[in-house]
Image (cartoon, rainbow, N blue to C red; front, side, top):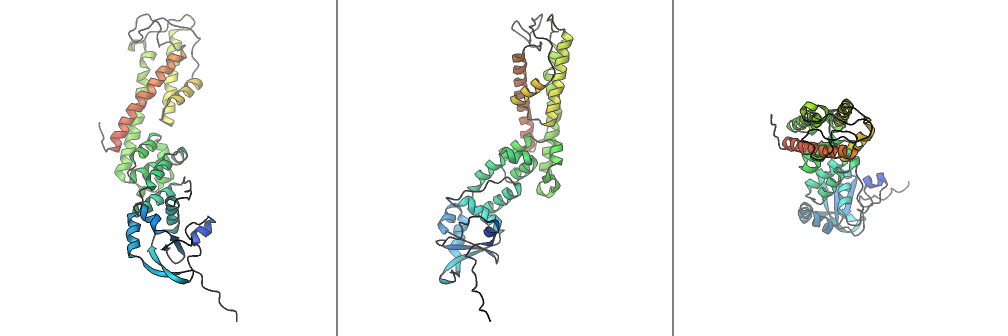
Length: 328
């Protein structure tokens, strides 16, 4: 009869790290405490490292009882039984330990798990790192609604606002996170929907009103007097440009200067080039009127002003929604 193999200990390597083929810094020989996660996973770590970042761990270490021989012999190590998923413990330790490069996380589920376990053990140093990840463009573009939900749940107001700015109702309904309504509070979702509706209605109205003096001579503008094109051509140009901006705003309301340049470059063709003198207008104090679309610098200045105007108004509505206000 062949002799039975010697029993293995959980200290040789924890099975979760082995399954991922990761370098495992949490089974080192000089570790002086064991975090035991169920029957199969054990993390041999250092009291001083965890105590420095977590008062919860520090208190646990004071009451820990030794029960595991080192390599099956010699002195016993203090053991802390914990009920957290081993992958969450592994992730937390990789963000805590000096000299260990934390993984780059783009999955919201992992970020949520990391925040949950960090909050449980009071590891506050984790939150700035997660906030940075939630602000990453790749994470934001993948699921802005999920970022909004997660940020709101943990009180990360600025990250939630940044995510909400790029949301539209189709993006919300198409998000994987919208399939799990239990993940977010009803009132919070209602406030977000209110903001998107208010921003959509008011944004389109503001865009059209901003150009109304250029598309409607009776609103204060002056018909173009340039000899190579008629006033009707200028009015038509600004009308088509306005509707192009409205269309882009509906798809993605984050209208910045770069996108305005793209809209102008890819938008309607202006009438032939030339300058137009002001006939009678208080809107243009110098000798040329901004009504004429043949001066790109003036158009871009107007578009930059419009982006600032929209941004200020939309931030106002977003602030009201985040604060739970619903003005008429």
